[in-house]
Image 1 (cartoon, rainbow, N blue to C red):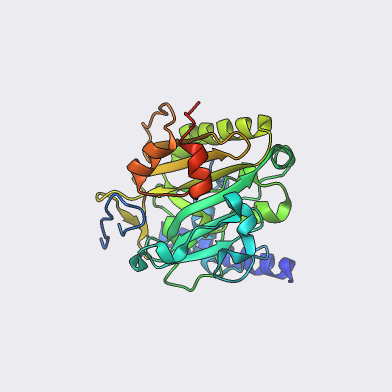
Image 2 (image 1 turned 90 degrees about the vertical axis):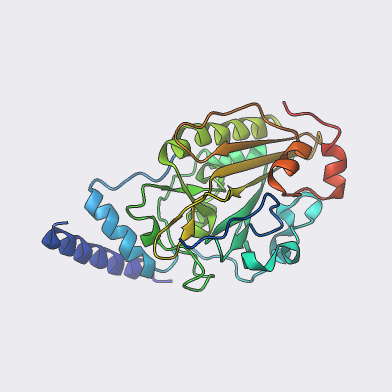
Length: 303
């Protein structure tokens, strides 16, 4: 792909939008029930100018992805990312979620065209990957996922001026190579997240998980996603759903240990002691581990 040409066009669009801004002077929602199978990090560094940042966001809706993304709408191409290579069953999700499967190099997304967000993002991590990820430079090139048609995806303009961060579900800090880092900035991997939550409490949870992975004796599977309680709101012209809570479930394959965090999507959220897997399922409705994993998980307690 002619990436330099795309960057040139992108810069021109941004400058035009900045000039226009200076000249001017510048709910629809369905309330999902508790069951997830039924219906219902620090964020990017801001550009020096808030106006330029807004212009970049608006122009970005028409910019192609800066990295290749695996095609297809199935987890069959990335079964290695799931425990026992048994991916989530998309057919089990209520059709009203309009769920689809998206693979990336090092994470997989169960995506909803209803909420315009991921529902669950899964990663398979290990100490070697986390060590490599520490050397990767953050790209900060957010982009709408071209695998999803317009009207069923979030756009950069939906987040512009919303007061919310574009919060990674598969963190940039987990990505072990340049392509994976770039893929993690697709909006299909993002939720609208309270900025303080994203940059402080949630970032600490992500760092704690990486710390555990570095000392683990094998693969660690991490499931992350939003929870939409009835009072959730939306942002942008595409009505992107804003989660009321966020979860992260960690499963250590070697020891069979599992634990989960559920954190309100608010600035004053506090990290509480992690819960065990049965408590997580009861709280969210998500049965994310298969039978073999659950057999181990039920014998373990959170750390």
